Length: 62
Image (cartoon, rainbow, N blue to C red):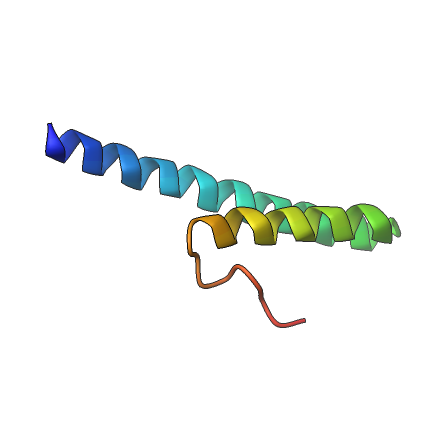
């Protein structure tokens, strides 16, 4: 059972990482579209998701 739990935990981390990076991409698209307040909201959400899983890219420079 321990092996299954480890695989599930890794999979969940992957999902969260993917969600965080997707939100970061949405922030870039909103920047390009000229919607800075939505870009900021997406960027903040991305950082929160990535920080929650301890991802090193949670707070990128810039």
